Length: 428
Ligand SMILES: [Zn+2]
Image 1 (tube, rainbow, N blue to C red):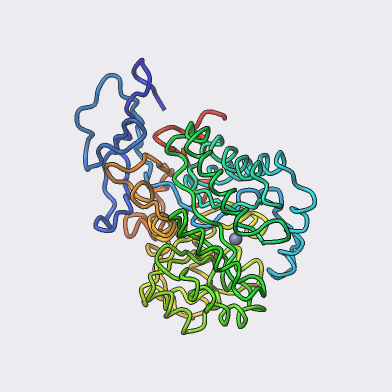
Image 2: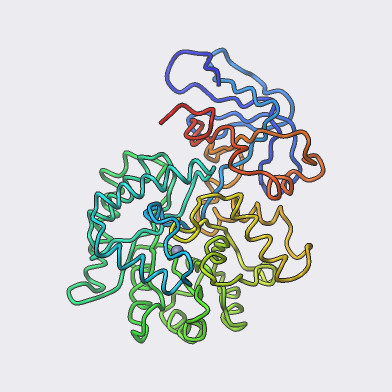
């Protein structure tokens, strides 16, 4: 990368790249350029970049693909220290081990260090935006803030998933409300220094985990209404609790949670009725195939849900269950699981999978107006991949990326037009 001008904040010109915008109306890649100014894309087009100035920072991207940075619609950044945990346990036993350890052993400093490492790992994998489903044992406001600070300091964009947590003596809806109010005030005060890297706050809700007659589901709904926030909650991940969670779905409906502001994570085992109700209500879902495969959870009926109109975004989940923050591997895991289950290669197209890890993921976490594709006005969060001419890239570039590319093909990862990871980025 060559800098060709003095002064703060030169424009970035990525020239002579194969551009894959991932915009819906723009399916074919083309040889062209991307220009960013002030951290946002100001021009993208075919051929040579027009109006290059002496002060521009020009990246000669010949032999490179430029695509939007990946978006993970469901991540737990604090889980970075636990890859390999409970290697032969299903999700239920695995989760008991992980969360008992977190409650007993992790303080704010530990959460901060783990979250920073998780954010770095995401960036190294080409993921520039994540929904960070946090955990705050005991409802500790310091643990809320440190997870946001650590992620944003590392340079990734996040939607902060505020950990509602399980109610207990001395911690209920009034306490959760006041803690959330304080956190939102922090995002407008000291947290505002991170600028637009903090894409927003949503609930990391509880939903129907526990046999509480819908108390927590109603509390999630109340917090959504009070603060006008989206809610993401785990639903129907474990085969062992599928029947009871499908029955408890009525609690979510009764509380008024089942609407477009709801995103359900995993959604591996919906009954036909629950699936139909979610589609009809405009609910979105995240699909986390590496994690679902590793934990023996299953594979959601993705082609059927897509055909019904479900909005689906992919996420790498936490490293305690997916072990790698690798979106390439996540896309292949998902594609292969679906094709193997359906015994039909055409059951899911690679381009559909790539969309679900970029623009589709941005949609389900409510940030597609800012990230997820290369378009004028969106953030200049870009991934440059080294192209290997021996591959059949020209036939279908999206398919070539999904089937054959990996983290080792990353040249540089840019957030707001600045290099943050990859061999061509300066060391952090
Ligand atoms: Zn999760």
